[in-house]
Length: 449
Image (cartoon, rainbow, N blue to C red):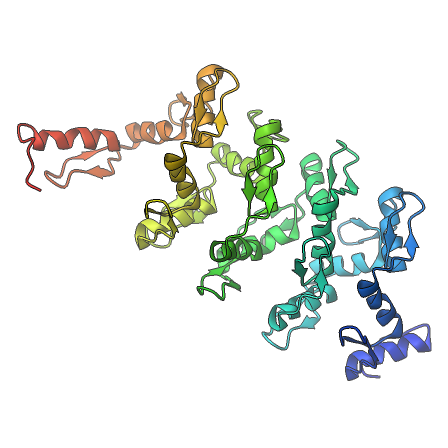
């Protein structure tokens, strides 16, 4: 009578009661962890022993728990018998449906006593608690890396094995993680079921919506213990930490270049393969990353959702806003170890380093010319293709580079943002101001230092 929940078996009721009294009588002798049920302890022990008694007859893959095998089988059968009556989405397991329903109800029954944050799923709650305890119980036997969550550990192991068990039935592409496949499918369907109540924007994944909401709230829950800097996404904090630690664990087998993030390596590989799977339906242009396509679409829509609270200027990309803010703060967090020069963005530092190394990794397949930065190659290619993707909505004139369109627009608006400190005259282009300054110095070439 604690919560009113009913069960078909007395043993299930007894196990459930322990949630209320926090009793965990079954203890692992290997690591000391305790469990409410003996079968949970039995499953846990297999982490230490490596035993996987449940084998899939279809592909030979083995699992620690029978429930994991049952879930896995749906990859082969495609069976999803549990359907959400609210939106029609189907699931392979009832537990997945139960978790999904909380998107509609907003229910978050699992609350962290440490920080007050609530969660809709027990597994998310369990993983979160390890942020406070520092516990990382899942260790990779291949490289020694430890993980807080089992799903992260399972995904990581596929880096070593190369396994990609999740296949898209539409195009045949395979993925190492199920949620990567789920996200990929939206390219074919165009489905975006997660809507922001603040601005009306839709997203293909719930995690993307959660991250987006922080633009409105300004919340940055992920803090670096090394320098105190906070981030709105866990992945951004993970990337940032590598500034302090410096490891680059992901290596390209094609050219030997190393990266600190798996996603960065995946993006880099497209330089060698030339693959561009993300296509703009508006103009036909293709991209190596979905995020680049999303940003590109804003050229057509004119959308600029990221606003600077300091000066009111709007941007189409969050990274552009972050870089812009440093104009106001003067912050230049990226330092060159070769000459000591500091840069406001990581990409600027990467480009700068090539001055010292002489590296020009971006090569034009048409004429063989090489470039230090990707954007220079992109602009150069338009000489061969004649492409002019940046169109003025005022007069219809098109340009091959975005900056040319920005300068051209000032013809219509009359804006002249570059002012001469010497005489007060203003110009629409930075180069015109530079040329003008020579008038003041003409006939006076020798300056006292």
